[in-house]
Length: 324
Ligand SMILES: Nc1ncnc2c1ncn2[C@@H]1O[C@H](COP(=O)(O)OP(=O)(O)OP(=O)(O)O)[C@@H](O)[C@H]1O
Ligand SMILES: [Mg+2]
Image 1: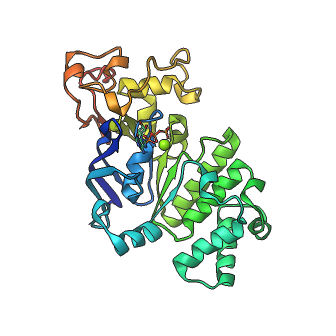
Image 2: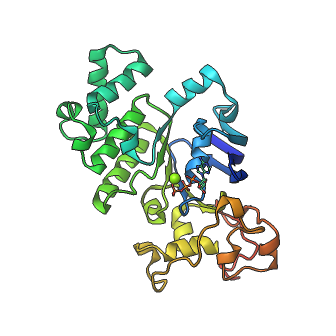
Image 3: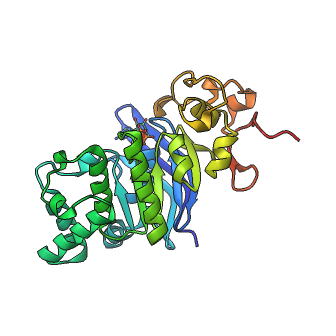
């Protein structure tokens, strides 16, 4: 039973210069208890594509396609049904946890009010539940932490608090947007272990967004690589990271100071810049930066098609296909 099935998701945003397509036809499925990774450079549409699922897009945005969750299309839910799903089934940890925590309110007050609203608990029961949640995300001395203000915590601890807040309603799907990006490597590993434990212990599914493909190798069951609002390649991390098929995935890996990229020569930045949604190149949007582009790449948008078991690729050329 698939938990979430996204089909042909498109997001357009009206801007002063006219309407621009930010997410351009994205398909994927998230299974129960699975960590589904979303990777790609800044501006590729990772955040907008998940905000669309929660219907938290900026004003002037329109969405098309389907996002089936429990037989219902999230993109078409309205009013009460939408609030119920958003509160109880899906939860999000936003890209910058400082912006989602109120600076002048204690952690205890913020967490317990959140719990009170969703679970209708008394003030006291809500505080007890808040303390439980802090323990669940391994915050040392939860009782004392309840009295603290966000700025008294380190970045890693704040990220744990944000995750605790998201778990308050016992969601089935947690969307974590760059939860480890601002953290140093050890703290980052701690947050990833936490997500991994939550998935194993309570069957939580996670959509994990990160521009860092290295992070995926330790935790994701499936990775999709976004480029200019589309998925260009996806598959299980061991295969995808050790033998990337899309020139863009390969370039991303080559730019990584991670062991996965070892043995592939010097660390290289990807030449050129990702296109802005306003002037996306025709055909394969990656073609101006690609050493393997052919005429077809310039003219036709390559479709995501199966290549081997559980792997998908959108490239006309497929220069890294395994030999016969
Ligand atoms: N409110 C908005 N109005 C117009 N364009 C927007 C708006 N929000 C985002 N965009 C554009 O949509 C594109 C995708 O943005 P998004 O935030 O989804 O990228 P991202 O992949 O999450 O990047 P990052 O890694 O930096 O978080 C970007 O080009 C961005 O400029
Ligand atoms: Mg983002």
